[in-house]
Image (cartoon, rainbow, N blue to C red; front, side, top):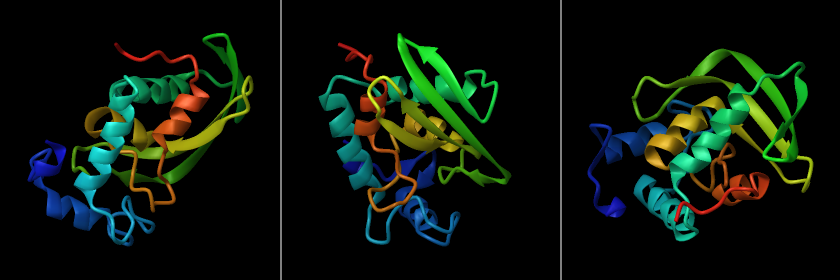
Length: 161
């Protein structure tokens, strides 16, 4: 069904794809030069749901880490019996969502599960893009968040059913 969509959030898919290319809304792009939005969405959806999870579950964990109080730029926190390190970089400008939904982000976060050593980075904008659209960015985008890395870092997550 995903591959049959013609519009997302009221915007034509080809318009979204064009704005997600490098040097459009972002210098590096949300998609690689030869990637197609619906293919990326369908592939990631198959991966996440095929393991019994939802995109909202994964986005929830990113939101929790983003909002967790940090006493320093390299804060440690305990979450679900695991020790995490959270590093935050804040930028003066912000990145707008390619989905034209009013979302913006100005923070990048690196989270490390100190219990198992796994880590990944994400932007504040990923929370909405993953939770609303199941969009982790294209495999050829340098800012992509791999769904498998989210599951490795938050290794306590259980499938939704």
